[in-house]
Every structure is written in structure tokens, then in C-alpha cells.
Amino acid sequence: MSFDGPSLLKNMLLFEAANNIPLAIALGLYPNFTLSFLLKPAQITPATETLGQLSSAFLFGMTVPLLLAYPDGPQAEPKRKLAYWALASSEVLALAYNLPYLLGGAESGWFPAALLTAQGLMSVFLSWRLFVLLAKPEWISPQGSLKKNV
Image 1 (cartoon, rainbow, N blue to C red):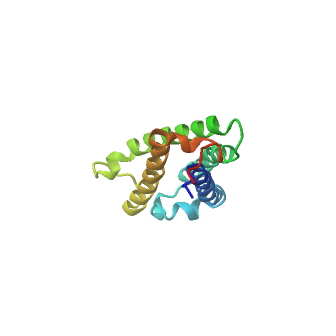
Image 2: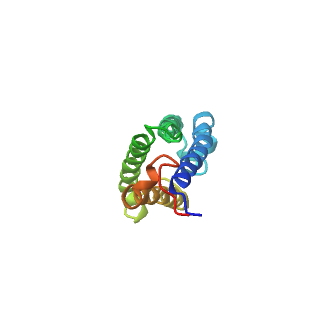
Image 3: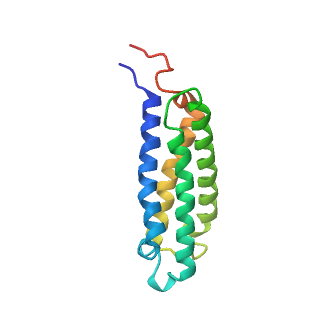
């Protein structure tokens, strides 16, 4: 039996979507509570709550391409490439924006452990995307379209 990269990729699409949705719901409906894990109570203002809710909308928006890329079919490969490149580009920018905070040259307002955890998780997903896009592009193909070694 051979390893099936497309199956792993499809499982990762669902795994990521399944992780994004609860966070997006929490940020959208309970921004104060959700932000309390990242910020000191005095830093949670109506403005930060609104930004949390906007982040929720963007997180839902980033989840849609993952779900649309899940089904196999003739458009699976371009949808998966588009989803992964779009998400990778936003992750690269987020990491670049947060680098001064991570290196200690600037104050983010976040709890340091929360910032490190968030950026660490983002780095894992970014590494996965780049691995698939650059090293294993055949995994993006629809499941069953690869010749299997028996």
C-alpha cells in the first residue's frame, strides 16, 4: 500500500477549517472573552472588540476557500492551489508584521506567550502549505488521480 498525499491534503483542509470556525464564532459573538486570552482587561476596549469581530469575519472568509477546495473534481487542483497561495500570502504578511514584536523590539500589547503561540501555529500551517505547493505539488491533485504503487 502506498502513501496517498491527496487524502492527507484533504484531511488537512478539513482540519484547518474545523479549527478556524470555532475561533471565528468566538471572536464574532464573544470578542471580550476571546480577546481576554490575548490582552490585559484594560486593553480590551470597544475598538478592540470591533477589531476582534472584524477578524472573525476575515477568519470565516479565509475558511471558505479551504472548504471549497475539499471536494474532488476537475476544478479541485486550481481551487486548492488558489486557497493555499492566498492563505500563504496572508500568513507571510502577518509573520512579517509581527516579527518586531517577536524579536522584542516593539510592544504588541499581546501577552508574549499568546503572540508566540499564535505565530508559531501560523508558521506550522505556512510551512505545510509551502511544502505542498513547492515540494509535493502532486498532492494537490484530486484523490485517486495519482498512480498508486502497490
